Amino acid sequence: MKIVETDNVGKILQQALDAGEGLLRLTPTWVPRSFLHPGKRIRLHPDDYYALGAERGGIDERWFSSTTEAANEGRLWHEGLSFCQFEDQQFLLRDAVAEAGAELVGADIWERYGRWPVYSKFFDNMGPIPHHMHQSQEDAALVGREGKPEAYYFPPQYNNCDNHFPHTFMGLEPGTTPQDLRRCLENWNSGDNGILDLSKAYRLKRGTGWLIPPGVLHAPGSLCTYEPQWGSDVFGMFQNIVEGRYVPWDLLVKDVPADKQQDLDFIIGQLDWEKNVDPQFKDHNYLEPIIADQGEGWLDRWVVYGHVDGEQLFSAKELTVQPGASCTLQDPGASGWITVQGTGQIGPLNLQTPVLIRFGQLTEDEVFISSEAARRGVEIRNTGSEPLVGIRYFGPNAHPQMPAVGDHKNHH
Image 1: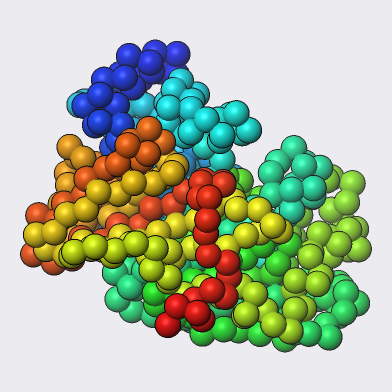
Image 2 (image 1 turned 180 degrees about the vertical axis):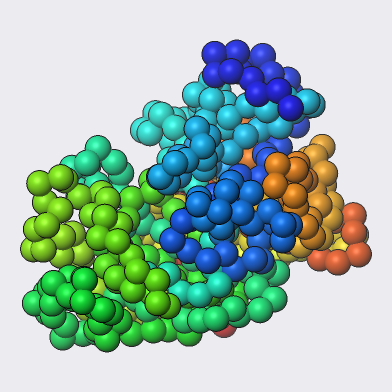
């Protein structure tokens, strides 16, 4: 497979866009995490979970339509970045966006951000991960990075089993004080720091989701999660021992200015305290699907929606097309598509949901839908014998109207 260099992408990109009628075929992007234990539901072949070497950790994530690098120690040069595939050549989606700009991501996003500023992933672990937060825009900017709001949806097709802990601790119990949390950080090296005693766990339910603003503590549980988020990989781990595994202090302060890495007040000050101790946390953050559009043999649902601090930063929809049916998707903005069930076609490209993927192997389940194609309309056909289901996520301000968190209660 030939990789096309950044400065030569123009010609092959135009050929790919012409042949795909504005759609780009993407190849799987696998990301390991050294401190986590893979959940083994993301269709990667069992022999390949440690394909990057045992010291890098197991592969527990697959990233979609990503132009964001994974912030891993010892990373490959392209780790986290999606490749487009055309004939026998590959090129980075990031280079494609730099080359075609507004044609791919839309004029508004291109003018404001100059890139595709979001990504999504499957995030798949055997057990829970540490109680952690993602910095706000202001705090991340202190180390030259961007903040990270994110959202979750638990696709039933990727959750045939619960794994070890299908519950997520979120936020802090109402009434918790910064002093309570400070004690947990002071006890980092003397056994379990007890932060989960200050928090509440929610049982995860397939086919639902959550919206997590920056500065809010969360310890994702063991359902395989589809996770649209801002294009950044900042975090701070506030829990020091998870399932007997020690989390080093440097994972708490990896995105904290060097002179503040022992400053407990500064570290705690990165949290949005009000949102963490919100007595109506579930009402303000929990999502259930809402029908966006439907027709004969097909149904399109919002699965991620709502605003973060008043801004529409990302969203996602799940399309289901019954056997033999087809529909024309017309969206106001670009999206990254992943097929989670069935076979069919999107425009001129085949769609097929893999059962097992070898590391490095090409698939027919992932597509980037350019802004131009989305506005023009893309035909999706189910050519198989089971429902064809795809999830697509959008960038900032894609939709003139979108449901708010809590609106699902009015749609039952």
